[in-house]
Length: 266
Image (cartoon, rainbow, N blue to C red; front, side):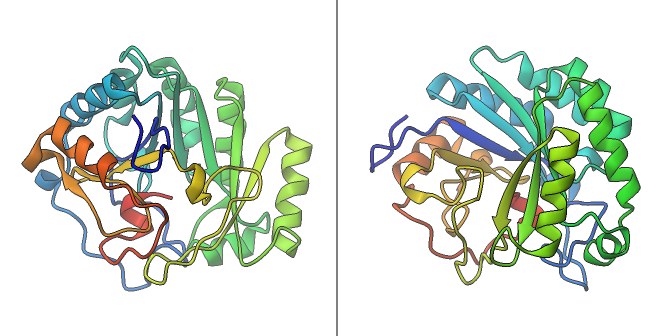
C-alpha cells in the first residue's frame, strides 16, 4: 500500500488493551485514567478479521502492544490466530516484561517471533520509582525467559531524556552488551505537544520513512501516532477504515490530543 507520499505502508501495530500492571511516570498520570469498557474493546475475532484484510492489502509486519498486552486474558490465543494468517513475515510484541517469565514459552509456541522489552534503568530502586512499584527482578526473569524461549532478537526499549550518554542509558547499554540484547534509545515523547525524534538504533520517529498504521483497543485505525485522525473499524468496516487511514496519512506528525501511550502504544 502506498500513501500519498509514496511510502510503502506495510507495518501494523495493534494495541490490545489500555490496561497495564505498571504506572510509569511518563506514560500514566498519577491519578490514573478512565479505562475503556470491556464491550468497547475489539474481540480477538475482530482484531484477526481486520488484520487479515490489512495483510491482504500489503501489511507484512504486525506488532502486538498495549497498555501491557500480557494483562489481557488469553492473549496467546490472539497470537495463534494472527500467526495463522498467511503473509505475516514478522509477528512481534512490545511488553514491559513483568509477566514474560510466565508467558514466554507459550507465546513462542503460539507463533510469536520476537519481543521488545521496556527497560529505562538497571537500578532496582529507581526502576521501582519510575514505574511506581515495579519489580526489576521480575523483568530480568522475563528477559531470560524470552531468550530461552527463542523470542529473538530480544530488543530493549530505553526511554531517555535527551541522549544515550545519560547515566541510566549507559548502564542499560552495558547490561544489553553483557546479555546479548539489542538496545534502542527512545527520546521521551509528548503526544500533546508533538515532541518526538528519531530513535537511536531504530527506525521510529523518521516521518519520511514511516511505514506504520496503528489499531487502538476500541478499533480506531490511526495513520500516525502524532495525529488526531482515526477511522473506526466497527463503523466503517475493515476495508474502508484501512483505505481512509492510508489515504489520509500525513506527511509528518503534529500532535495527538485523543490518545495516550497507555492505550495506543509507542
